[in-house]
Length: 119
Image 1: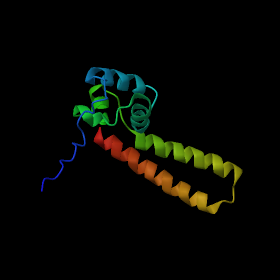
Image 2 (image 1 turned 180 degrees about the horizontal axis):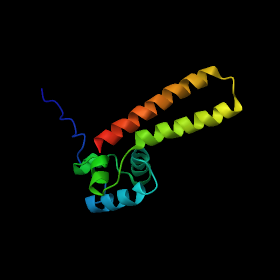
Image 3 (image 1 turned 90 degrees about the horizontal axis):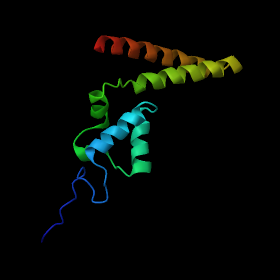
Image 4 (image 1 turned 30 degrees about the vertical axis):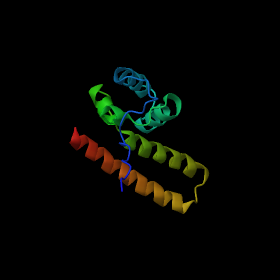
């Protein structure tokens, strides 16, 4: 009995016509406006690139080579704290949100100290 061989997960699809250089240029232009998670979605939905690993590199590696600083987690937590502060200005008695804000501020502080040590 012969089993069918599974397709390689990261092999280049036959319908993908974009070269690695074109992909790197596109990532560079998208990196000016978007976070890495959004870049991946745009590449998948608008340009038909299933994953950047098709060319052997992760998206983060392309960004590192370009000298782009990737701290999307830190940006997301900062945005969350901003939104919570806006919410608490309108809803002063929301105790659950106050507690979640304290937790988020603590997480933000920890992430900032971690990223400062990592540099």
